[in-house]
Image (cartoon, rainbow, N blue to C red; front, top):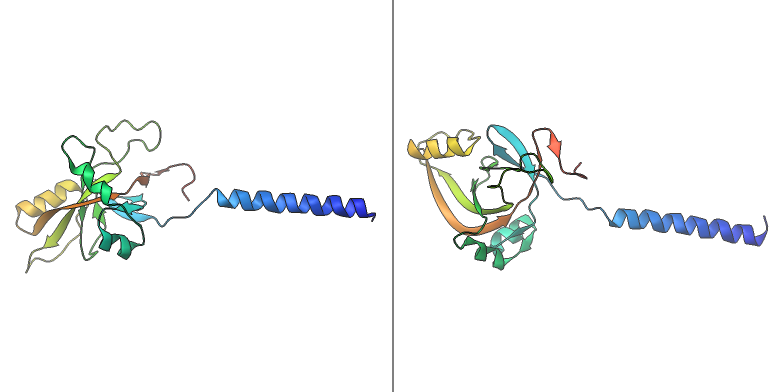
Length: 167
C-alpha cells in the first residue's frame, strides 16, 4: 500500500474516532429517581438543591440561590419527601404531556420539600398521591413539615412517555 493511502486511511480513522468521541461528549447519564403521581410511578432527575447536606448526600449541585424562589408568586410546588426514604417522593403535578406540548401550567421542576414523617404507632404504608398524603395527615397518621429546601427535579418520564434522549 503506498504511503499516501496509508496516510489517508489513518486520517479517516482518526476523523471517525474523533466524531465518536464528540458524539459521546454530547450525551450524559443521570440516575433516574422514582416518585409517585396520582397512583403511578414517574421518574425525575435530581440536579440541584438549596441544602448543602442534601447536596452532598445525593451528589448533586448545592445551589443556595434556589431558596430565593420561595418568594410569593414564584413557580415552586410542594414535593412530599420521606426523610428516611421509606418510600418514593410524592409529586402533586407533572408535565402533561411531557415535552414541548405541556399544558399543565401548575407544573414546575422546582419543588419545596415537605417532609413526611409517620407518627409513632402508625404502620407505614405507601402513599401514592398528594391526596393520599393529605388524607393521612388529616387522619393523624403523618406529620408534614414544610422546609425551606428547594430542589430542581425535572420530571423526564411518566405515563409511558419520556423526554427525547431518556433511556
